[in-house]
Amino acid sequence: MDASIGGGAVAGSNAKTTNASGRQSHPVPPDAWEQAEMRAALATREISSVYRLLRKHGVSQRQIAAMTGQSQSEVSEILKGRQVMAYDVLTRIADGLGVPRGYMGLAYDEATAIKVVGAADGQQAEEDESVKRRRFLAHAAQVTMGAAVFGPESGTWSAGPAKTPAPGRIGMTDVRQVEAATRALRSLDYQYGGGFCRDAVVAQLSWGQQMLESNGTEMVKNRLYVALADLHSLAGWTSFDTGLMDSARGHFANALDLAKQGDNHPLVANVLYRMGRVYLHQDAPNDALKLFQLGQIAAQESGSELAVAVLCANEAWAYAMMGNEEQAVKLLGRSKDEFARANLAEAESWVKFFTETDVYAMIGTVHTVLAAKNAEHTKYAIPALTKAVESYDDDMARSKTFMLSALATNHLLEGDLDHGAKVGSKAVDCAEGIKSERVKDRMRPLQVEAERRRNNADARDLADRLNSFYAA
Image (cartoon, rainbow, N blue to C red; front, side, top):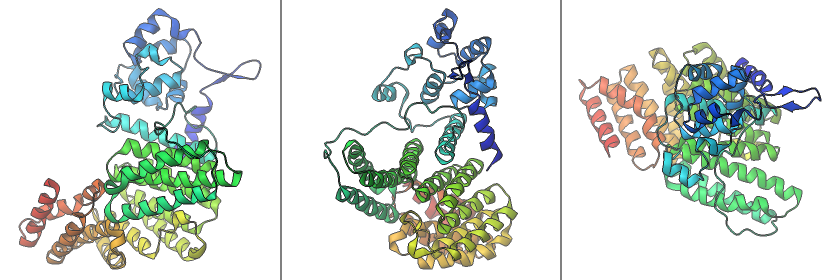
């Protein structure tokens, strides 16, 4: 396992001390929050002062970091005077340290909090996003490994859905209805994008979640856990596709918990893969790689070669983004080997999406990333992407758009401007029918390469069309 994950586990284990009776006690003295100087610092949300006063009480930087989900370097910066402004970070610090929220003026319900500080999916500072990524990694490690990493989890990941009447007792038919709805909504997502169906996914989730409170046999409840985990995963994926990163993170965290409760290792691996993809999209390959590595543990526990193949391919993508060509190529090779060994007929439904077409797509994607620094990789990317494009049908319009965009980019890098412009135009044709922020983001490299070649009429026409597409 990644060394930094192991290190986090040590930090988490030091968050509490053991007293003479052998019981764990909180490192913050219970009367610390009642002292006048501390109350003044809490009331003004001067976190640097709060941390300095905790240090006087004998609480170490490491313990503060473990309780709040921050790194020691962040705690150090705050001690030096860096301000903490984001509402969700303040609430996490309060809950982690055991501060009564009212002492910091944080005792709001969700609606009030949004009114006061803005919606959770608004623009956040880069440092705050890094804290969120690390917090999710801690949660993922706790679910996967069964041990705390950065200290006890505080609060819930996302607000509970509005109460909806649910049957007093549920049977397998009720669960199958959730599964069928999820399949149908996932098909809409593939074809038209998350923006077309996310609201419907969340509405379905609002209903399905209530069934957790219904009576049912143990077999029915276990299958319900897995069904709702998959539905939360879809909610996370459609949120990601529409640019709602915090909502995505919350749904994926809930999906992890439910998949673990349902004892479904392949689904745990799948959720970790999807959240890793969010971090790749945010240009955070180091954090993505850690999630893929955790997913690899779950995939190997499941005994699914197909799940292992998916994780290897995405690890390769992360390494490519980090500039590690050797590891990227090595993991692509392992992904192909695991896929060749997989029993596709008996694969869990969560990984059946990964077909031979997707293997080609991942090969092409990884080599496209590497081609940005070494154009030699276009000779590997182009044939793989071509096969993927030829195999994707209209039901996979978003994936096909990704591959057309990457293929056009490679042709431009190779100097085949006429053909690159034609393929790029096809990518725009497909993109115009899809409601997906992710499609727009994934086409940016094509726009950059087209702009660089404006002295060529075909490239200039493509650049102009892309500019119009983004302006619409």
